Length: 406
Image 1: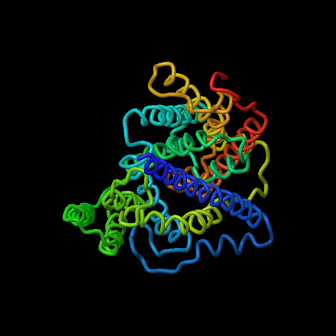
Image 2: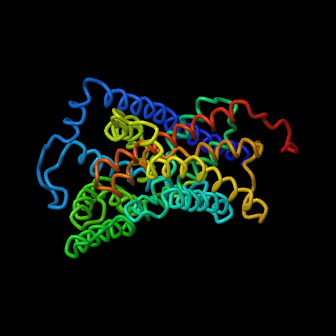
Image 3: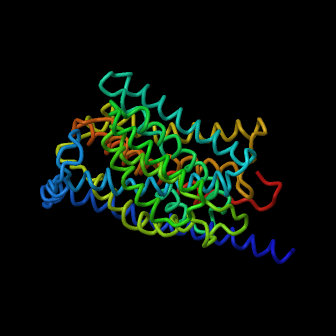
């Protein structure tokens, strides 16, 4: 029995190390892609960069979207795979992971809630409730797990594994909130027949699950149809990724989260490298580029970019750290083991890196290219401030030397 427990524990640790390693590497690659996008967008190749992104490739999949462009294929099709991974991670953690019990869910849910509400309030205060900018309230509410874990990876052993796990679970719950916001707040109209088709396809996936079908190809085939139906319905097509993930069968395997006979685990491990090392960096390169020509302090201090930047930088750290302190005081959860309060505050700062999801929501919130560019400036500024402040604090913060330290 002792050997079994030790083996199981090694399995859990190995899975966690593999996940954090891939997220960290993908996050660092995302940083490079974002920096490259900014360089190209402000270089002699800027016109070629923007022309390539909006090059019409066809066909017309939706009258609302018009002819498909490279940018649309990345944001509406490839990012559906990103959301599929998000959905798989959420389901795995809630069914067979670190969020499987209500005892484990309390702290990350409490922290994520504070980390979404306070940034939105900061944004609304800074923008003064301007009607034209109200739709951007959710932009600073999301945390980029890959980017944040990538920064933590640069710290090596100075960041306890418990902090990485805490950041991961908070970001996963945060993603759930972001998905709900996209589905509810950024869906203008819904097409009944297409929505009905999506429900039927989704129901068929659940039926396959119920009858014990474990081969992945029927689910993937139906998921493609589900994506197209959701696209036509008016709900953002990437939501299909999360819906499909919920229907994928999972075999509960405590202590062995990489079980070969668990369809969800097989799909997650098969897709994750492609999403982390290709799709997310490609999204960053296609969406982070913004020309700064003619941009001065007045433009940087405009309500929209300032609201987004302060929502990420101030709102996230205040919302998450205050929520964690309150949750611990109310005995809803416990402070991450082996971490000081100063280190927890450093992770709260890193949660202000909202890059991928914030840029994505910004593109949904505003149709005006000028406003979208202002969103990009705010996201990049707030995320950079959060990354630098969080890294610096964690780099020099004293580490806990004994269980009694604080």
